[in-house]
Length: 268
Ligand code: OOG
Ligand code: MG
Image (cartoon, rainbow, N blue to C red; front, top):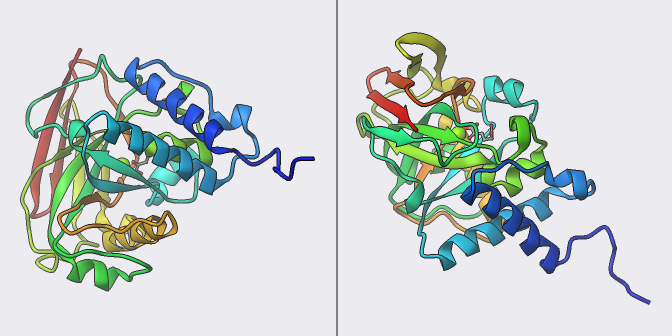
């Protein structure tokens, strides 16, 4: 008689699911939600899949340079129909320079988000407050994130999106680096333009009341995973507004109050 709960995913199943996500990413071909095959998948199992994916990237030579919080604003939660924030990892291979072209033929259905990023100067671990995050922050700066769900129709549930590394694909740091207390990050406005037209408008307070709250949430999730946030990490707090779908030929500009702007043009 086996004591295994048949509903619990064993290590073998976790690794297979991570491979499924990685293949979808590598060949830019959509897959169905993981919960279609594993309807009982839990959030902690989803994070185990994400960790297996991270280990696989590291084994292939990518370096984890930071993390991202996702689904931290009401506009994003409403757009995706998921009301619990999550986290994903960022590697050096996902970074793209600001004010250049980004290829999208290697992505399935890219969308762009305007975010505030934190760069840390000391380690954060355990359960922390937004104040502790601010004290551990070297500087903040604008960032664009290009997300790309590996799931058909960009439709998912919390477990599936977490296993898919929270749709992480590309990120673009830019604008001005400023001290975290130089501005009230709640009132930092952002105007997101798509081909010269205003597509989205928001302010930092959309992100859990204050973007540092999203970083505190993220450090707590890392703690649940047995991880810490090392000094020198690049961490995005989550999209301030809903994401904007892009195609080759499109240009996106995000203008941040007092923090500068980032422009990216998309190409085949
Ligand atoms: C999940 C990732 C969300 C954000 O900033 O809210 C995210 C998704 O919407 O695909 O990156
Ligand atoms: Mg994002």
